[in-house]
Image 1 (cartoon, rainbow, N blue to C red):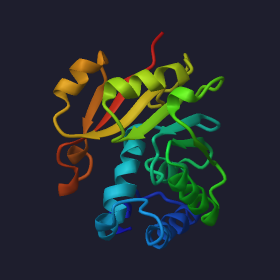
Image 2 (image 1 turned 45 degrees about the vertical axis):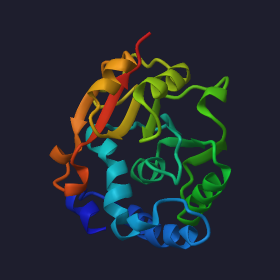
Image 3 (image 1 turned 90 degrees about the vertical axis):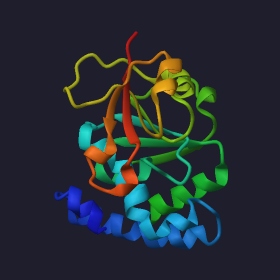
Length: 211
């Protein structure tokens, strides 16, 4: 928690309560189901929660926005973002149902009412669109954009810091991946945002939606 409060100083008491509860809940569930890497539990808040909240350092999700977390896995970045933006709706999607069940139980345990889950693949979602799709280390950018683009609605009048497109967290040398994707994303180096060794060669990417 110390690292979270090092970079974010305006949490409400309710947000602090929810964030504090996360580690024990994930530790408990991880004993039953391997939701996240157990070797990461010692650095849970830096590796998972702070990493997810990197999105909140650059973007603001407005009230009543609809955000989909594609391939949420253990609930990242969706759960931390849902805590940070309590007036935004987050729809967490994954193809592994047992992880989603854990994510929903954790959301219920801390009183998150702005989270829903769906056991499916992104390409199978029909008749629903979102303002933003977020994702963390799920697939190459080319695939993420292919899956996401049909699910994103075009919003014309938004503040400069409000995203409308694909926002993803990725790592490693991205030059070839970006070139092959056909996208021209905005890119932020996370080690320039968070002064922590863990974030070396980790990036935040934003591909705006354009018709």
